[in-house]
Each structure stands twice: as structure tokens, then as C-alpha cells.
Image 1 (tube, rainbow, N blue to C red):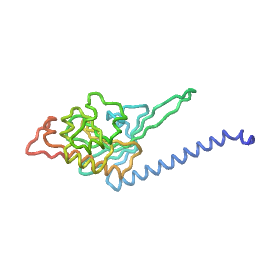
Image 2 (tube, one colour; image 1 turned 90 degrees about the vertical axis):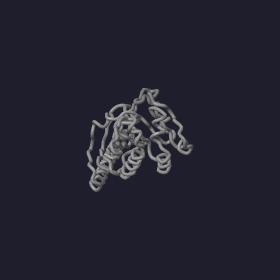
Image 3 (cartoon, rainbow, N blue to C red; image 1 turned 135 degrees about the horizontal axis):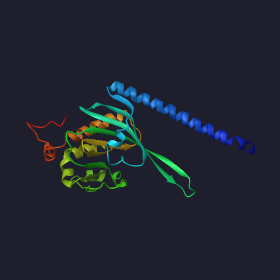
Image 4 (cartoon, rainbow, N blue to C red; image 1 turned 30 degrees about the vertical axis):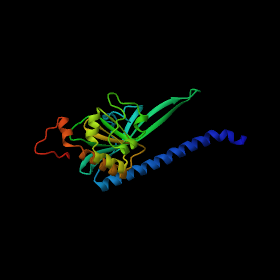
Length: 237
């Protein structure tokens, strides 16, 4: 065993290099898969878009350092444009011995533009929002008419009326059936996020869910938000 001591640093170095090489190869294959899926679907693929890392607020954005938006997919799904990407940021910690470590937090994000802003509303599987810091100015943990929905989801909104207006009985029933990732109406977009890396097949499903939510918003909500209707309202762009 003592004979191995001089070469241990070399073995450790070789192991690190091997891990890095394997990681690089796997990531390259993943990018190729995303590009192939995007091409077949008629989407566009971009390796990185720094502006997306700063575009949105709220969970999971605005945290940590080295915020990046990579593997960006754009196109049209369920009749609406979308943008999806891998989002990541880093946080640091120091142990009792002064050793500093870095943790990379990864999320898959999908955003669909809204016809008009209606106010802030967050909906997430029970427990997801409770682990995040409460957003300033939002009414927390709103209970709606459906007990089943209340058990499965946490709701935050600018006010209770907005939550009850947007989350109609039909929309709540639909969300209970599909169990989506967390999503938020914010500004000009509805944004969905979940921990992990982007899956293009999941993007298709997420876009369908987000578009269904937007389609289910009653016309009077858009009116209350300042949208003037003329001869009816079609929320599709």
C-alpha cells in the first residue's frame, strides 16, 4: 500500500480528468438530442442566451451567482410561441474547517407569452412554494373552493380575487388531472419551472398545460386588467 502513496495524486488527477471527459461527452450528446428534437419539431435551438437569465423574477431566478440560460428552445406549441431553457446558478458554502464548496442548482424553465398582464399568481405542487421565500406583496397560501385542489397545490397571488378568477373550477379540475410543475403568471408571461434539466418531450407537455391555463382565463379577467374587447376576445396571439 505504501508503494501506491507517491502515485495517489496522479491517480486522483486521472480520475478527475475521466469524470470531466465523460461529462463533456454526455453533455454533447444531450445537446445533439435537443437540436435533433428541435429540428424535427420545427423549433429553433440556441446554445446560450444570457438575456434570459435576467428576464424573469421570482423562483428560481434572482438567486446565487453565475446565472446562466443554456440549451434554449423556441418555437410554437399548442398554437402559442414559447421559450424553454436550462437555467442554473451557483451558491457557495464553507464548512467548519474553512473549506469552500460550490453547488450548482439546475432548473428546466418554460415560458409562454400572455395576451396582456393580469397580475401575479403562483401555483405549485404542495410544498414547493412553502420551501421558497415568500414573495413580497403576495397573499400567501390561498385556499380555493376545491378541497382536492387545495390539498395538492399551494397558491399565491396579488390578491385572492385574482386567484379565484383565474383558477376556475374547470381549470382546477384540469390541473388536478395533469399534476403540472410549478407555474406563475407574471408580467407578460406565464412561466413554469421544475428542478432538473430540460427534457424536450416535457416541453411539449408543459406548453400544452400553460396554454390550457391561459385559454381558461375568463374574458372579464382581461377586461379587469385593462384589455378592451371588441366583438369578443380570442386570447391566442
